[in-house]
Image (cartoon, rainbow, N blue to C red; front, side, top):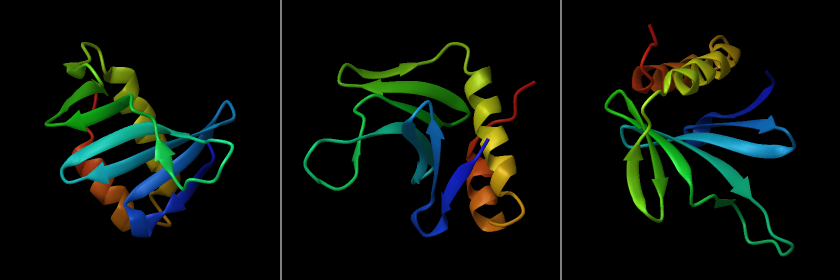
Length: 105
């Protein structure tokens, strides 16, 4: 999996099926969101639907509230796979993310 790294922003961006997906840290949470683009330049705009990892659990954040995801194992595995891509070159960023994402059994 190919990812672009932005260590100064506590984030990792990757391309998935033509869309930019951003993993970023907010306090003690990891957020996953698609970058939404418009025809006019507005700067970075992220989707209102986001996956939030906090306290060892995954949640869907939406306009309807924060709802726990019952089987988040694939999400955690996917994040860990992305983190392996940055482990050597961006150890500090890797450790920040790795400390917030639970290990699956």
